Image (cartoon, rainbow, N blue to C red):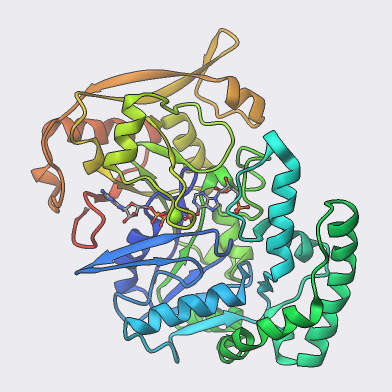
Length: 424
Ligand code: GDP
Ligand code: IMO
Ligand code: MG
């Protein structure tokens, strides 16, 4: 049975939530493997819209079991808010949701650190979501992190929080000129959330190993996107985890050789939230139209997303980085009104053209996109669910991307709803 990783092929917000929800009907397990509540994955079906931040997008279509893997960083307060929201939609989480005992916690001090560090970076700020992601992964790799299994022993948990806070308060007061945080107050505020989260904590790698033995179908849901990967993205303007395919294995306990499919999700254009280089960004009326027609405002922070034409140099890099053998194209309908649509096929750098995505951020910043222009199809593709019904000019656009990347689109999305999809 397939073990499929679903990965953002750009800078996040490609429509991973929609695609995972769609595919989850045929999956026994859906697993988040990295990131935290910085993610915002939107699901739309019938008259329902749900934005998930931590819970995998597999609860609403079929009966798959959902796992928050060891690679995720979990803010217990944010998680409880989300559990309650999901329960309002009549989903019984017992036997459906499992949280890795090895996943690390995001505590209130991580969120405070995220904010004060961003403030102190001034004009070099990364534009983080402020959800404490970077500082939580710092705690993890510094080996002072607190994990979900620590929730099971209250005394030990409290003494770890106090110990960590002692050091953090020194930094808050002396480096950042902020007020220290109160450990007792923090522990008290966390208590109710911890009690609600505890029953879901278990050994999720073992569950997944058994699922592999039983030949069950597993979907691994990436958050963020390949170009936000801490190793392979536009460093330092990245998140602090590995959304790319390798991260799916370390973040879940699934061995690389068990993976059968790597599906990249790309929009028919590009967006980015936060700071950092974005070669095809449009600071003009076209960018504004993409933002308006695509409703490009952050699902987590509400920030307007930066918009630009599709960047094939970056997409091909993502395909190679992840070994993507499947692609899904989303938001094709957002291009319906354009007279002309462009795609970047090469970068011009220091007088030379290249199809290689530079690894240093300064060169990505400097790269001038070379475009190929397509005539727009100027008709509605919204809701089309049969490939043959797409306008010829849209088919040409799609097949050019497929030829460039060498990968076919198995899925083409023509609207936010589950039903607005072409599956080939
Ligand atoms: P994710 O983080 O990758 O899951 O993506 P987000 O949920 O942050 O952003 C994608 C947005 O586009 C959401 O509002 C989706 O409802 C919407 N969306 C997804 N696919 C399509 C599509 O094909 N067409 C349109 N118009 N909207 C889409
Ligand atoms: P989904 O899963 C888009 C961006 C932030 C910032 C950078 C670092 O919905 O695609 P962080 O808070 O992670 O330390 O911020 O990463 N970012 C995202 N951009 N989609 C996301 O998630 C993102 N998660 C983080 O805007 O630039
Ligand atoms: Mg999102």
